[in-house]
Length: 285
View (cartoon, rainbow, N blue to C red):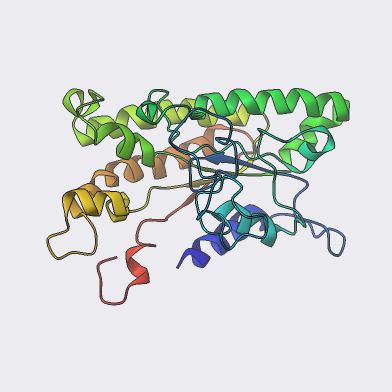
């Protein structure tokens, strides 16, 4: 079912593009923001438990353990391939020179919308910090392209998948974080969405026009959550899965509002809820 999500993203971010030269990427560049689902090595040199640059990570990846939190490619890698890029988008930690003209991957394992999220893991690059890194990239691109930089950035593809750690590595850890005592799930979703809105507007101000924004999937299906809480015969921890629903319910109308109020914005919501459980016939989706 993951392929359905990837293909829908490709359709949404490329549907209004003009056909380019044969064999050329559908967009000039691709920028990636997120957490461990898309991290391709930004955490490698950080002092953190959230790193994956050692076996068995990467056992099915041609370059081996690169810092991807998977045995092979990430969602972002698949999207880059299908957009027509002949090389994967480099992580910010190693991107340099003209490499940044085809895009940069800022994702960081353990990162969240909130700056404190994941702090018990050690180093990680929050979404606010990822946006700061993107501004550094923009300044470099402006040095290369001059007055053409803004038009160039407007034509690029952008994806962002954030929020899971704000639950898994924040709200669901009451011994470390106070959020679950300060907010009900609905109130916490409001707090997250309010901050996320400002971050998305910042991304727009930096030139993002075609942005695919992933909703949250069933975080109760994460192996660590299943092992800790049990499932009472269900496939996943239903109580935890239900926590993300208020977030998704608020994210959808936010994206519509941003498209209405931000000139030229073509932001799209990507529904990932049900992807995990729909992969198993007969289970809830």
